[in-house]
Amino acid sequence: MTAPFRILPRITPANAHFWQGGAEGELRFLRCRACRTWIHPPSPRCPQCLAKDLAVEAVSGRGTVVSCTVNHKAWVPGEDEPYAIALVELPEQAGLRLMTNVVGCAPDRVRIGMAVRVRFEPHGEIHVPLFEPCD
Ligand SMILES: [Zn+2]
Image 1: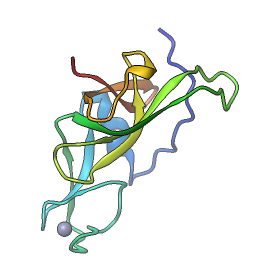
Image 2: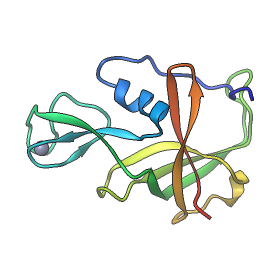
Image 3: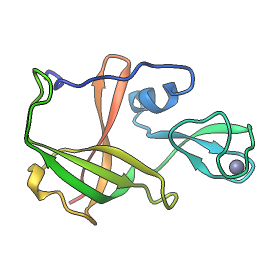
Image 4: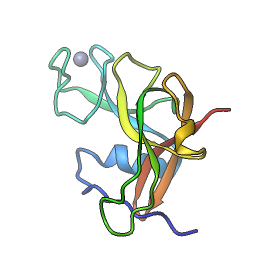
């Protein structure tokens, strides 16, 4: 199966855990060892307590759609549309959210409050975290 067109990020030492964790089926974030805050996007310091002692940890991969829309325009050549764009909040921490796509269902089926789980779309060393309905 050919992966769909996608503009990919540049991997850096600061973000590799996030973009490459999917190779092992894990959605990974930085987490503060001092106050246990999950950190996204990656930062060299904890935004809550300013500690620099951060570790990479995996979350459950579950989430809830907190906002969504459907794109109907191909903004770049090769892009498949329509597709669902969603803001997904993870249960590990209020406000720990990803802007992502919901796949595995018709785009107009995506609703606020929908329970979703992560799945990864591989593009070489990059594994883009997307979400699909749990049901
Ligand atoms: Zn902290």
